[in-house]
Amino acid sequence: MRLTTSTLRIGFYTAILLYLAGDLFVFSGPLRQWMRRGLPDSPQSIAKATEKGVVARVANRPILASQVERAAKERLWLRGLTMDSLTAVQQQDERKAALGELIDHELLRAASKEEAAALAVSDAELNDAVKRLASRFESPEEMRAQLATESIGSDKELRLRLGARLQQQRFIEGRIAPKIRVSEHEARAWFDAHAAELARPERIEAQQVFVSTLQRDAAEARALLEKALGELTAKQKDFAAIAAELSEDPRSKVDGGKLGWMTRDRLPGDFAAPVFALPLNRPTLVRTKLGWHLVEVTGRKPSEPRNFDEAKAEVTAALEAVKRRDAVREFRKTLREAGRSSIEVLDDLFTE
Image (spheres, rainbow, N blue to C red):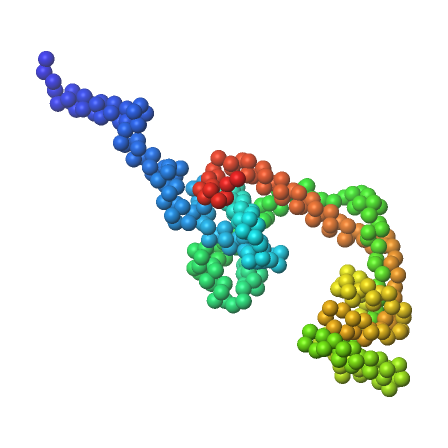
């Protein structure tokens, strides 16, 4: 029997296919191992990613340690805190929370992508967003340096990123809008249950002359104000003249010492307690941790209730805020569950 060239070729190709099938699906040969090393979840790929600072991936999109650090610092900045003010455990908790938000951002980016056209952002909105971002930095140079750590090297790239954020916010609002509406019935029911808390608090109108003891002997400061009190009582000088001459409170000094109408929660505790206890029109010396004050209460309004119509806008806004917080939390939870298979956390520091 003679073997033709075509028969030999078929046999050769068949042998190759059989070898490839065996390599890939049966005995895990060199080819399969080579391909496996190139997969995103292979130990080799993960090692390369972590060397580049990747701490997590969402649908193979990397999240860098530098991004997590900046997001954590921004979370703290919004609350008036810094990393230095936290313990090591608290710092890591903040980083974990920041990573969670970045993961949710990537999931949201993918979910809202199909509706990008309907969520278009105007130039005016982008300009406002850029201004708000710039206000967080002390200088344009500091802002550019920080943006560079996130691979944002141009105004165009920055506007694209901010536009995407705004689109995502609209996407969320569209999904949660029905859940955050507050009916008048809900608002009235909440008002009826909390009417006492919504009453207008007691208020006083006062004026002061303040002398600091931070860089002056306390006895000297008191002596200055005792002399001023004597001049005031003898009607040798009026309160405004004394404030203009002695007061070290720059805001009230230029207005005759007037502090205006105040509630207790606007004042430091060691000042509020004695001042709210003063009778009307009786100038008195008051000591606080900052210094000595010559204070006169010139008006007083007692606590008084508010009716529903007066408090409706405040109550509605508060209930909407609570509903929005809960709806966003639930939406993010649903989004995370739907995208769980696409999330990889590569750094052990961010795993429980």
